[in-house]
Structure formats: C-alpha cells, structure tokens
Length: 77
Image 1 (cartoon, rainbow, N blue to C red):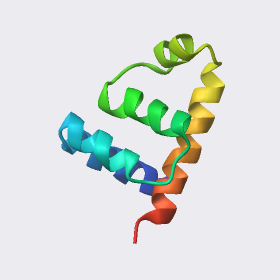
Image 2: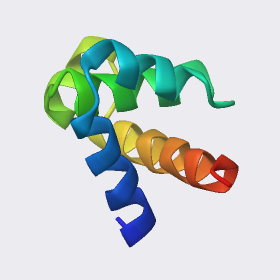
Image 3: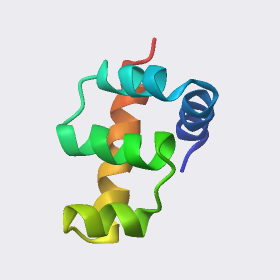
Image 4: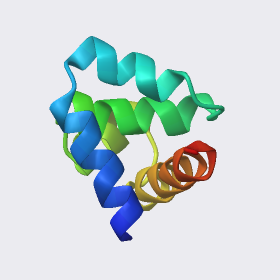
C-alpha cells in the first residue's frame, strides 16, 4: 500500500464510523469497492471475514480495496 493510501486509512480511522462511511460513499466508487473499504477500515473486519461474507476470494477483496483507495486518491484535490 502506498503512502497516500496509508494516509487515507489514517484519516478514516480518525473519523467516527458514520462520518467515515459517508466520506467513502461520497466518492465515485463501485459498490463492492466502497463496501469492502467500509467493512475493513470502519468496521475493522478481517480480509478473510469480508471474503467469506461476500463469497469471493481474499485476493478479490484486496484488489477491489486497492482499486477503491486509488480512486479516492485520484479524486482528492
């Protein structure tokens, strides 16, 4: 994870859960990207828990989160 993604994660962790979820949903992300980021960063679920809940591989969760973080990074001024 690059430094900008790490900075976004820290920002999300400093917000309250509702604020963080609203912040994530304010960006132009696909639903699964937003959901995986919310579940991991806001709800603090493990990658394995997220993958099992959505019937996808752990690699899919990681890839979609990375894609979502990159889209957020691209949209931040």
